[in-house]
Length: 471
Image (cartoon, rainbow, N blue to C red):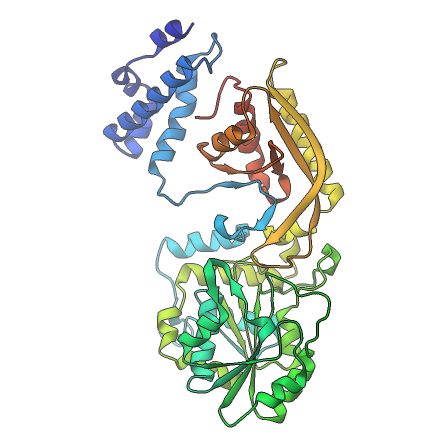
């Protein structure tokens, strides 16, 4: 059978004359399409020799269907889209929050030409790039001013550099956290030029501990939301209101690093311990910092919001120019914030849509997915498909103790192990990242975008070695 199929493969010169090849050559070059065909045919021969294609496979049709995929794949940079089937919604390794359609459209509009990034159209003179998101943040958060930098670690460092340099910053020992990539709050503070003044213990810090540490060198009190871990049991820490009162009593600046940057109440989603930026501003915190690409659901950014006098100083800091973001980030962030402003965030922002999906929603979605998959598999396929209850996680250092009930799709294969299936999915034209549990491949649709369901379905079909296997 393999020799018969191998003899049916046309030459590259012949395939280059096909209308599809001619069309792709016009979009790139003839030599580029030749390279794509060479890769495709090499892979095709390997699949034939491994008996991975049915005897009645129409090779010409298969080549025609896969050539555009190879053409596109060879154009990719090392950074490429993937399908996240892990159930971890804010997966740092997979790019954290996916953007809303409106944010993507805004990026495209701004990227294809010039923009008024630093030009005031009303005055016909130089403007400030902060204007594009500041007004929205002022309305949404109730703050006096806001600036944007490239991530939250940069935001914290810039705030400390400006407001606590050559002075002391008081922080609870229980909040000396390490965030992703081994970045530690003490290290960030050291780089900023601020002197770290630890108070309390890991599990208990009282208001009196903060007050006892205040001296003539104290400039700020820093509160850090421990977003990626929890201390439970014999614990104590002062309320935010108490810290606000203490800072005012001694004329100190209270800074709060919120991390995830949540702007909506998540209690209806079962998440009870994720504070909102609005609540901190309302409580009287002088400066808050948080991420743009976590719970907010926007692009990577560090948002600094708070009192106008302090933000004016931060804006003038020389580091501001080194840490500022570009027009594409402003475009995406502004459109994301607009969705909150007009009350459409829950419907349009992918992370919020995923968070509010109920256990019943995920059960019905998984049932429908498996129904579609089974209809398209041959009767003698090698897959065993089932469902069971499980948990998704938010990820990105957010609400670590809040599992989200979900339905997991469990895939077993009589012809390959879970590890082999995981590798095949990961090496798919559109890579798919899944989980392995107890030698089963696990798919959690909570983290799979709607538009990714069809390519995910086709890739799972390929695991059963149907007509169009994974390449």
